[in-house]
Length: 359
Image (cartoon, rainbow, N blue to C red):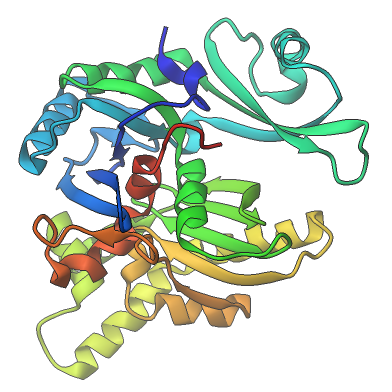
């Protein structure tokens, strides 16, 4: 049986391992007398097709890359926390009558069909966490339920353990972003922010109120769709199109101005879905006032995207900074690389922040 049931467990020294569709990333966060610091950060590209929308298609190839990543990083610890995302996992907030954990576990297992899109829990790993009393009815409590099919979880565990590592905790991408946010940003009890991570195949939208997520949505659209459009437009390789997406074309300013407009056009379906998701949240949660939007993920660095989304959403929008309050080891991480690291390291750093006694 996998470690998915230990989703909310406590553990000692952990290394964050973010397994994405286009790349894998490692983050080692350590405690020092001067606070927490990012001691190591490494990333490595993955060949297209090894992972698609959170599902592993080639376990052996992924395991080989994870082993190579750890060797490259010089990291000695073998205990990792990694995460699931997208269609591979279901995260649902449910309200129940007050009861103890044992009763709640039995209720979720016996009546899973009411809360989760599974006919039976026999082939599903699940966990839950009681968030506290429901704010409108003290006789009820809010609970987060997380579930994923065992074969998907087992594939992640197998790929990681085959690389010589121990999976101490299987987390969720959106929870890792929440952990990273709590560690870096000051917020009030009623402050609402939206984190949008534009990954390769998926875009994660997490609404956080008072440091706790109250709404999540995963879109099956990501930066690869933009890259593929550029690949077709310019007749270049996928890798070359990735470079064009973020760095532009060698040529005149006018050429790159036209290119930026084209890229924003290609990004329009993603932006539209982000806009719709935020509108849906507002209508569902009684028009909660959103303070700002924080962008993460590789494609969040597309020139002009932050301003474009800010205008569309009519909200202050900025790139996320997972090192706002966390230092970094200058011997292991070059300062000049920080600006490119920050947007892509958010999940890995969130995973690497897991400690004994945290929620």
